[in-house]
Length: 119
Image (cartoon, rainbow, N blue to C red; front, side, top):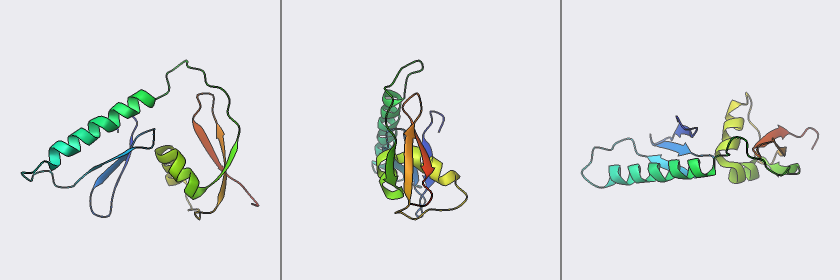
């Protein structure tokens, strides 16, 4: 969480973390067993954090402007992963999977989401 990953607890008690590239890692609720569960979870977390750092935009970097796109809610979840999930979770009301969104991009190339009215 300290490096900017988003997380949630699944219905079975696993901690699911998402990085800015859309990758995920799962940490089970019980890491005390004598098998490799804890080692595997640590390795998954290291990979998730390494990908996050590599893909994070550098300050002062310039990106070409990108055109606005139309996406459904389900397409945005798949394509933009954690970034879309954070936006979606901050909404007071839900949206159906087929609702249309307009996706624009800020100066650093990060997606911004807006619900399209009347579509």
